[in-house]
Length: 342
Image 1 (tube, rainbow, N blue to C red):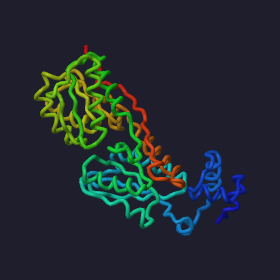
Image 2 (image 1 turned 180 degrees about the vertical axis):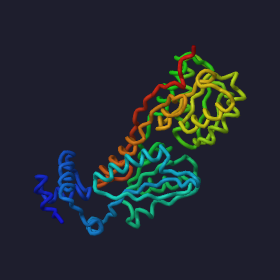
Image 3 (image 1 turned 180 degrees about the horizontal axis):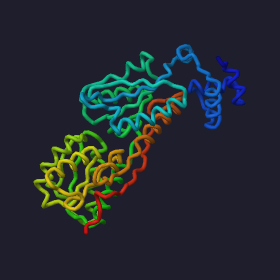
Image 4 (image 1 turned 135 degrees about the vertical axis):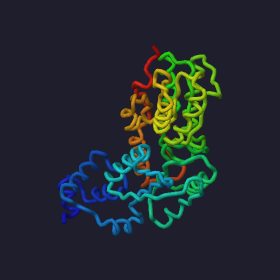
């Protein structure tokens, strides 16, 4: 097996630099880090992870905590799979491990022991909500000044690092597109209000209506839980109010597709009878009939950004002083489901 010295010679750096890169410790220029990683790959060099962890008092693992939802295959869900892919890329490039953990939604989860037992060096939380039971665990990490980040959710007090998407602006643009396409009676199917993207998407919907001089109508607002099943269920209420709707903005693609399927079964034609716009721009959006207009959310980039920012700051983490917040842009992808009114 190749030695660290051989990796250093091939990369044209010192052995100390090789050690810093492979252990994720200390500042290293990106160009140098890439050169070292490429040399290590060419020589098939692998550090002894356990010995290295003990030497630096770290586990070498980034923890990712996901909600455990019975009967839902999270890894096949576009939302989670894309974010995990982005996280995994960043972790792999830094020679670290990835530890996946589950928590039960709507129940307290104690994150702090994961750090104290040296199982993880930093933590990313996916699928977090504003439920008091879930926020308690987030507050505990913030109180301890631990290195962690939430993706696609913002904490109330700002002490938790976050990487989110510009949901309000994306939703505003989606509804504005419908208005520009000739629609005026625009409904909204949202997910649970406990998630900050739900609140931001609703704010964008309301803002677009106000800017166009249209009054929001509570009778045109519907509730789901981000599942395709909830979209199908909402179809009953949407169908009952179809005379008062000519378009609807849906807070994610899964609900939008469920809604489209159930409405089609009732003889409703999209977009002739009802235009529909979704959110996420998942793989399925382009494959349904008709193809679904959707707000593209950069979940993969969000995962990668969260992991990179967290690991970049890890060697010098200083509690709340190191907290960061980033918002990534969204993009509207127009397809046939929102064709202009004839």
